[in-house]
Image (cartoon, rainbow, N blue to C red):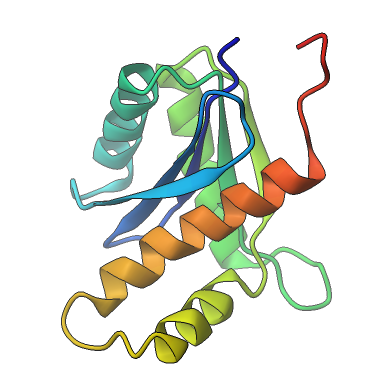
Length: 143
């Protein structure tokens, strides 16, 4: 049974992507995209979701530390609304607080530095968002 989930760490310049295995158990980063502009990013994400045969899309929602939503969260919600126009897949939000910091700590620990670090952070952030989502929202046996 296909339970593949695509996760997005939306950014104005780069958008990190991760996808789960078919069982919906394990997340893997698949890279970043830089199509330019919110609409172009939404088109590319919809294409990738179809290509990867995702059954749902999880979008990282940046919240303030107190749980409120700021301007950045509204931008992400606008992106998700565009994406919803391009796909019939369910689009879910997942709190992404601290994922970038977690990704940076991991890359520091592995001594990963240099030009590719920003893209690696975006990809790893998407992977962390997805794994956290999968860990807290397991598929039921009837899905």
